[in-house]
Structure formats: C-alpha cells, structure tokens
Image (cartoon, rainbow, N blue to C red; front, side, top):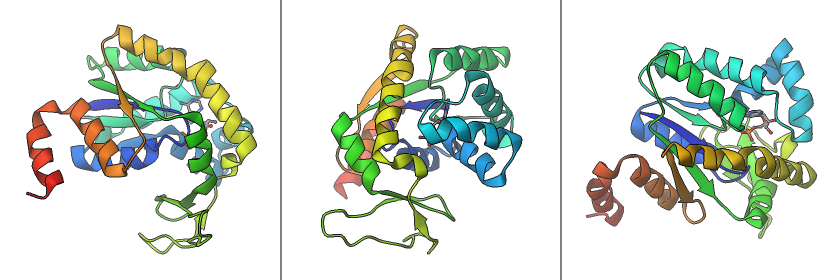
Length: 227
Ligand code: AMP
C-alpha cells in the first residue's frame, strides 16, 4: 500500500504516520525527519536545508525530491510506504508521479488532514519531541505540568526550533499558498480523501484507516467497542 499524508503543520501527521505505518506494516517516511537528520549530522544537504527550515520556508523541490527518491529506493519501501510531508507542492507531486510511473507503480490513496488554523498554533505551542526516539508529546500548558522526559524511552524532550509562533504562522502561509493547490491536483486523479483531524488520536486513526482500508472496518469497530 502506498499512501501520502498531507496536512498543515501541527495536524498530527507525524503521530498518525507512526500509528498507521505500524498498523499497515509499511515504513513511515517523513521528509521533515530526513532533513532534521541531515541537519544534525551537518551534511551538505543539511546545511542547505537548514536555511529554509529555520524560516519556515520549503526546501527547493529538486533537492527534496532527490532525497525522497533515494529513500524510496531502499529495500523496506519496495512493497509500500507512507509519505509524511511529501509532496508539498504540485511540482513535487509531478516528480513523484514520474518516479513511481517509471517503476510501474502508483499511489493508492492521499489523505488530507483538516484542522482549523487556531488549533494548529495551539497544538504546536505545546508540542515536544523526544531527542532519542522521535516520539511526539504535548506539554500541558493549562496546569503547567510540563514533562521533560519521554514516556516511551526516557529521552530528553525538546521544542522544535520552527515551532515558535512566528515561524508557525509563516509555515501556515506556505501551506496555504504552496500545498493547498495539491488537494485539487490529487482530487482530479481520484486519489484524495479528506480526514477531519481534530478529536482523539484513535478517532483520527480510525477515520484514516477507514479511508485506506474500507474492508477492515467491521473488524475495527469490534475492537473499538471493546467487544
Ligand atoms: P515537517 O517536519 O514536515 O513540518 O518539516 C519541517 C521543515 O522541513 C519544513 O518546514 C520545510 O522547511 C522542510 N520540509 C519538509 N518536507 C518538505 C517538502 N516536502 N518540501 C520542502 N520542504 C520540506
């Protein structure tokens, strides 16, 4: 199964990508994570990408697509993958389509996560990421009981540099201007399903799975009801 997740920053794509990939036994490939790994290692690609990431802008299409194509060529992605955060422009979608067509394969479904803007800013203000395992958690700004260590592996939690409110607003503008046109592009290819992404994580997962695997819905409703 080959799936693409599209959504504004803070829509919960990263969290859902992990859960869905595990449920579907395919790798979750996040271009944001790939770029952050390059930045952390100080590679030439990382140095270039950092200039764009710091301001909330997109890294140029050709650079991003080459990096993603190289990742998709790895063995674990041969029978399926879930792309989180790529493509983000119509140009990237065209390049991805060319890459897949050359291998006689195609995407099965594109999920667009819908969340209101004010929700996004709020979510990103409280987002923390584990420096060791990459798990995404939310500090609780209401009672101030901020967690400092990951519940999963004990690693130190940190705030992403680009989650500052100013950069988040810029990332939202970039999403509207450059990524939203992709929704029509995939609609005309009969690939797009819109998924309301507010509510409990499990509910969003259920909606996403319902969009990609209608045939397993009865089984899911049984486990969701606990019967
Ligand atoms: P993310 O973790 O998906 O929010 O991505 C973090 C940053 O990485 C973005 O704000 C961009 O600067 C860069 N980035 C990630 N994916 C892409 C993409 N498909 N095209 C261009 N830049 C990207």
